Image 1 (cartoon, rainbow, N blue to C red):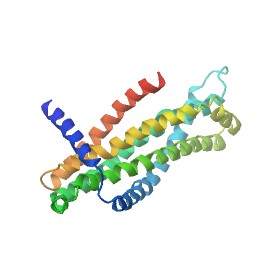
Image 2: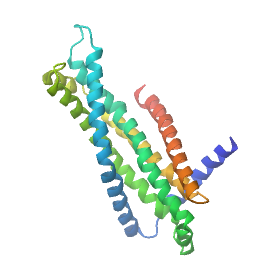
Image 3: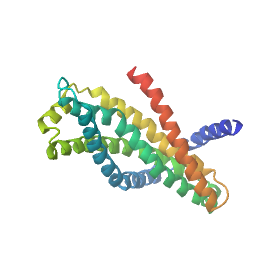
Image 4: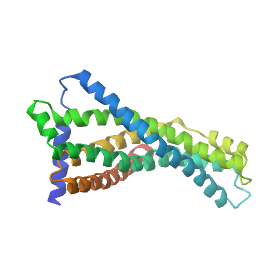
Length: 247
């Protein structure tokens, strides 16, 4: 328990160093652009495959679950849309990114720590926490919401493919369900959650990588911890935000 409180306190102290005013905005901007390319382009392929197949599976499961003639088939499109916008795209995709992006961030910063590159930055008078972590956080706040919107679109496309190539559902019913009772706030709610998740995905792995000690084995352990703690935090934040925004 004491270790938990120590890590939480140390985490917020690190954030205090991260968000200090940078000395050279131009240098930080180059880092932010680099991180945006790395975070965005490096994750699109995986997110695309998962989103399309999840959309197709959700549609198939919803169709197979409807066994009453009183339930119109357009509810399949509605259920797929709501599932992806409210939960699957923002939460599940961010959990996947916590594993992919988070472990990469923790390993990268951890390697810099044990090879004494961070110490060298400190000796040169550079705020190493801000220089290494701040661009990653800002880049994630820009790119991960875009990735989530992309996932929403592809998930709905996955359901459309089911309607086009199976006899269980017509395209007309599916498209009507997609448009039926659409509320813009659902997308806003998803993006608000995504911003919080994006911060978690980058800041917690950065903390574990920044304070790693030892060698390659410890880097591996810190990467595992960063994924576990990021995932748990995302689920807790998801519950809190749902309580605040939807209920």
